Image (cartoon, rainbow, N blue to C red):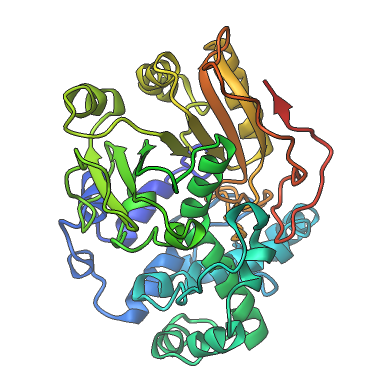
Length: 429
């Protein structure tokens, strides 16, 4: 972050009245409340969140480096990036105009996401009227949601949506824009459980024949902050009549909360999705819990954005887990943000002699665009845009397991509700 905007991480901590990264970790772990960081009103909360994005997109100067710290002005079109003056805005426009329209959505979704924490999003979902294999993406999923417009209207008319725009420091957008924002955030919320369901289908693992255990490896505050015991219940509607599914979040940054309860040694309760967690490294969890039968051996292991491609230090931390997953021949599904991350990750997995069963665009990728934090003038990324399916060492895949089917939904950087073919083909093992 500081490589692009020197001092930005310090400013973020300062705006939140935090002295160090440890204070930030305390907040993530729930050991400190918002009031401990000077957040006492809704306006404070939204203002401090906005303050962390205040730096000139052209010269990278922070407010304190300017003669007048209040001279930063937002782009009127996207309401997302800032400039210290007209000269910087004009100089940056040839680059910014490529992303301005999309960054407007980023800024809107960043605010409306608050309704996930208030419980307004997602809306109550309906039983699936199609079998899981016939639901090819978000367009199919939304088509099964009865009274969709009424549900969206109720969120727009709700108390917290009104509070949001009374305190956000920005004018309330048109209802049509807010409806689309809510829809994008609903896909963001359900993307992880539906991606797990996709993984089960890809590997031919049938929840209707036995109780299943799924391990989410490398879980962090992204997967576990404010996670409720019911957050993965869409899997029950994806697989009606299933025998029970346990989802165990495993990672050093797992946040304390309702799901911080021990994994099950016995099969998950029939017809339920049971969430549990373990705070620590996956290979330690395997040794202390799986090998001692304190936790069930997984039927599927999923990693959402493991990030081992990012730098040698991260790869070194992931290496024992990657080798364990390979050598125990566990079905694995990793997701990544972008095509570039996909290619880098595939290269590392090939070098580790892992058998790559397939890779393709994820039909249940989040449709919410996310800004590259300190470099706003880049194409936004989308959670779980692509998946990589792995099984055992490259030389010998698990006997009896066929290759994954070709995916008609392969696409480029931006996910779509319907799925569109792109110019890169899925690679099959």
